[in-house]
Image 1 (cartoon, rainbow, N blue to C red):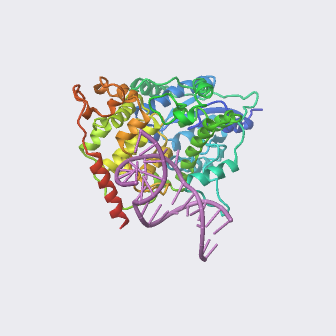
Image 2: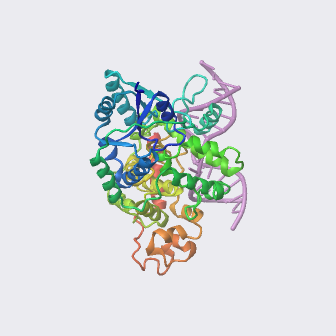
Image 3: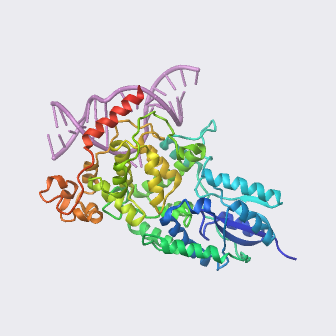
Length: 452
DNA sequence: TTTTGAGTTGTTCGA
DNA sequence: GTCGAACAACTCAAA
């Protein structure tokens, strides 16, 4: 008697450990793990994230004992065809809550059910699946602090344990799809960090050992290695936040509390996006602000040539490494929205094109927060000063000198003020493209006008 | 339903 | 140099 077969369709859960959908599929029968290189998603990722995905797919194939089936094409075509091909009676996934992914899944599910194949969702990329944290009247939250309380009260399961004796069944892969993966890896413009679960767990272990204690203090310092660097792993589910939360248990102190809160921010923004799918591309709270069209200033911002050292350092770090420190994401976002008066989605798109961690919800809502259109009913007057922010969070100028070689000759904090140094522009650093004080007043004026 | 209190991340100015 | 106040009004959460 042949055992039933289940497809395990992997998406943002590129791991073997702590995988509830894998456990559910294995409970059904033999498991065919599959990843689909879907142009609707793959082509949109940008070369850095495509390269990172490719590296993790290679690692994933090893983690699944070489049985990972890779196919190219639109999921709505590939998954039902593969299910029929291998005689699968169930397709198992982790729930996808991002708008495009959820729409894709609905279409795939419909096609599968028409073919008599069951669709089974187990788990999600979050400790608490978006939509589950609600108040007494069943509504979601739009303010972080109450969400955090309710999210903690809701709680989450412990890590999933893989059952003994999982049997993987082979399905013919698509060599051409693997060629695409290798091409993506070759075309990746940055040096990727080590990919795969083992490397990710090593990063996490290192952070727990030496970073967590001072996390609260160091997390805002782009000149220090004070963050966990796990956002790329969380992006594709190489690690699950549930794993991290379980490991955090027993750690006390401000660092652990803060790290937990940062994980909660990721869950909060996923929850908000789930309830307001349009918030990826539209103001959550439309203010009716006047915006300027992206022009030469926008291009200078993208290239890190605004003449404001910490802004340029951040934008160049992004281009060079596919990552930017969170504090600097806020500073550069504030500069684009408040100093250049450009609508946040233009900046969000640029970030998504280059970030290795490019998380849709966190990116869009981080930008909305800065722009004043997001979940926080933020005071309109919260305009970052790019100079004082640089001096405050990069006090010795090390971050600026690292990413802006034209300023490498300036000592200490003077790197933040080349206009005050006699030789500040000796190596071709551009002059400031705007006057911050003027643009701050202009931004406040636009907010005032919008309020009416 | 009404009311009350609170809201990640800031800057400037003047004492 | 340090410190507190001012910068508005609104939305959201919860009693």
